[in-house]
Amino acid sequence: QVQLVESGGGVVQPGRSLRLSCAASGFSFSRNAMHWARQAPGKGLEWVAVISNDGNNKNHADSVKGRFTISRDNSKNTLYVQMDSLRAEDTAVYFCARDYSGTFTLDDWGQGTLVTVSS
Amino acid sequence: QSALTQPASVSGSPGQSITISCTGTTSDVGSYNFVSWYQQHPAKAPKVMIFEGSKRPSGVSNRFSGSKSGNTASLTISGLQAEDEADYYCCSYAGTNTWVFGGGTKLTVL
Image 1 (cartoon, helix red, strand yellow):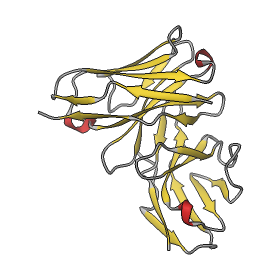
Image 2: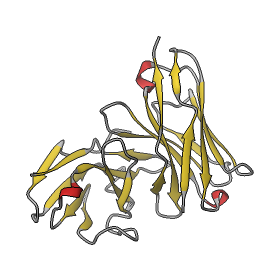
Image 3: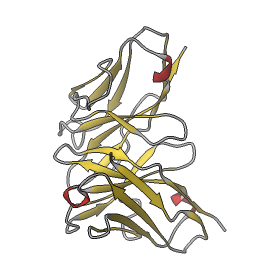
């Protein structure tokens, strides 16, 4: 079955960087676009970024544009997000999710990894 | 990229039906048939319940149904059960490779 496992979360100071990873298994990773979404403590879901199956097309939410970069390595079945210039408001659980091809749906989600931005 | 509007909370008794609304704009919900609904239990990952506005993934109970009219999408849960108590989020494709979520609705089964 589809399995998505995020890693790389932790406590980081404002202005610093962090890279999250999402290891995928149970499906043909290179066939699906992938997303990152996040959820601040006690708050709702927020879409963060998407990358096409081949990595050639990507987009980011306005709230992270210019600071976060989504990428993928299909040879390693792994999705990444590089987070630079982190702010307190980036504190959240970060989820990776598979895009259900052609339906614009985030159909399978990982369990998430917590990022805390604090001095 | 403003969040879609959902009621903060809804409630119902076991066996009853409830409907959760999700209001967007002509830039998202009103322009695309790509609204999905997610159920999230505390400290768990979201689970898709409805996609493309009204389609149910395999394994999701037929007590869950979705619809759309204009800029507003709706999720209806019939025959409420205790395990339906959770947070529910709508999400819409908003064009140019962007997605937007609703603020979420807390469902309480009385």
